[in-house]
Image (cartoon, rainbow, N blue to C red; front, side):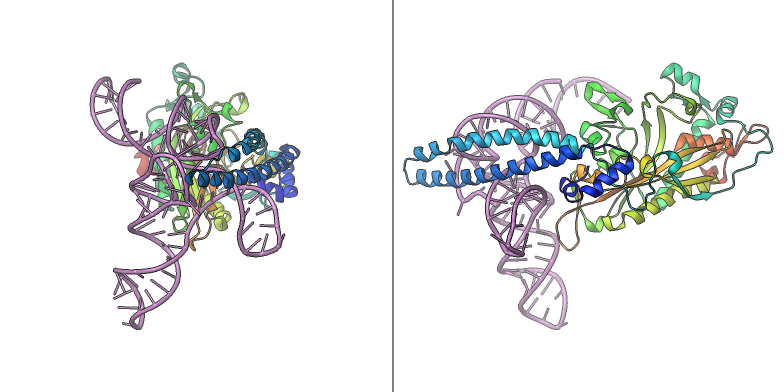
Length: 421
RNA sequence: GGAAGGGUGCGAGAGUGGUUGAAUCGGCCGGUCUCGAAAACCGGUAACGCCUCCGGGCGUUCGAGGGUUCGAAUCCCUCCCCUUCCGCCA
């Protein structure tokens, strides 16, 4: 969330940002509540100051063995009024908090204005889109043919969107996870293996609740949430901490399964591995000094892109427009890999800067090296990468006319086989 | 799941109703000493909110939230977490 004072002092900027994102926020209510809140604080603090001095006097009188009942009686109305004010404050704070949760983060000036995905700006292309000299098959035909992903048994055992990976399919999955983690380590990310269920505070910290609880599987009996991404536990790793500046930037790479209900998203995009309820992902998370966060965003994006280059998969990078970037981000890149069997781009990574939006809510700060006041860190994260769509694109890209699948060289050391079929 | 103990500042750790925002030690910053450093000694060192004539003033905060009281780190209630023992268990 944004800082109330920041909103008050930059109301035009924040309003424009929300409009550019196409997100209605309760600005008028917030400003009114802010006024009311400050008035209450003003009155309350004055009364509390009085209470403190009078209490001091009572202590003095009693120590000298005097009778303080007259002074105490005098405080009766003060006490009642303070209680009233505290009650009103609770009310105002609750409403204010609700209001603040409707205010989206402000887009960075470099982000293009736009309403729809068509307004996203391609900023980078890599690799040649192959001109097929034989009919390319979609990956689900090939996974069926080789029996390496079993969707039907997944449906039987768990439900649609929970496939089994079998034989070389499972080995390929494991190979990619290790490959991604090793690459991240080489690029300065510390590996971290988090819990895959989190409590309510953590879900709130990264903004999954309120608002997006429909996306998550919830273990109601214990009020735990299955993680929709490793971003949630890993970003919360440093919740309520004061980090020495010398430790920044902190970079983590985490593999987890990810669980998403994807409620109401059935349709043409859900075939095969395109969209699942459970999938594997390696997530990259950074905690950085505010002055470096946009450089860190660029390197984050390059770290993710590098993986696709090593795998030899053509992709494009899009700078997301204001209307398509989401509530919490200030700037976001999507990486889309080309799936030639389906003739379409599949999103495999999303790299974002949140500036202080997440860290404020999670109270993650750093102490400047010169011993100054604590400041809020900037957080970023990006997929590096989401597995199923990489697998889909890889299978489609490396298929042969006979329907075999050639494993790209970068993975040989991990798969220990070079072809499927 | 049962029993007991405990959660205090950057860290360790005192403090059980009245100048305790909080002893003490450590860390960190500055100074003295020194050619320089170490040691020693001296001094400083919370966050947040509101107001400000920008000097500062006031308020809140001792796991979280309520309550009692003129006054709460200290008493009461609810919840969360940690440690140890028992039970269960990959």
